[in-house]
Image (cartoon, rainbow, N blue to C red; front, top):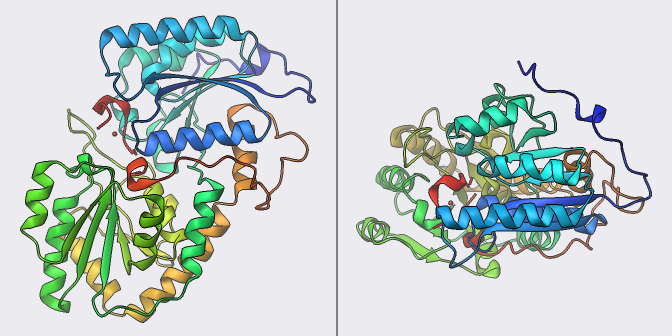
Length: 413
């Protein structure tokens, strides 16, 4: 399948175990929000907390657009940084669009590993030249976030799976909300969190249609849409035509945690459109994990990699297809017994707590991205890693799963 690839262990020698891992981290953006940034920030902070000597280089920041000139400036800056950085254990590439720069950087740093991180639509829309470099380069290798996306990458190589991590502080906030027992309000609430500018690809219109049908059978249902704003005018107009529907633009961490914890049900309804300028698809859906940590049962997208993010039939359910009719069946069935739904939410919190333990994530990040174990004192499967810095988790804003107002060719949330 990948006959041109040579084992990287034959081309670079491993460093002494008592030296910190040296990592050059090439990223598509910082400060623009979205699932990819959340994923990369968790990786960065985990490596730093585990003792890695890490230097991050970002292509885009607020106020810096995706133009040919800015791409060229980033390439020059990244290669100059790689030359000054010297020997690296690993050059991590945060997006497939940076593969040509990464291929040069691994030579300049004599890196043993060159993991390239993949998420969702970036796999399907990968440029031919980038795909060819990835297949031929003996150091570069794909790493992805779910079994679904690993299968989509099978033509370029076997991709280890590194699911998204949750900041320990944000995780603790969500679990604390889950532990609070609240009486059920008279009207059930459905919540969906995504970057509001991506409302079409995230299935907001289909969710609104399905909820309208649920109301015809069960009576009043409150629908809350939240995420990084501002929301486009088209979304405001759509929401205004539906009763009992709220739009929360850029909620704070505290407000978002409360929205998760006070919802009866969380629904992520991402559409799968693998081609074209409006490509969309869910590689994982980290908001599903966040909702479960807060004690909320979930409904995941019919397609994509989100089934890795919850337990089908135990902590959540999945529609048969992406139609509003199939989504309405699932929503109506789960909302029909709110006491049972609350019990499902408590099971969701228990499962998500076990699935997101910081120590386990630290070990996975180090072994997958540096080829080394965390130093002694950092390698633990417990929750003792409270020293991991506070990830800028906040706001659906900085969430809203790939899982992009970032430029559309930077992947999905």
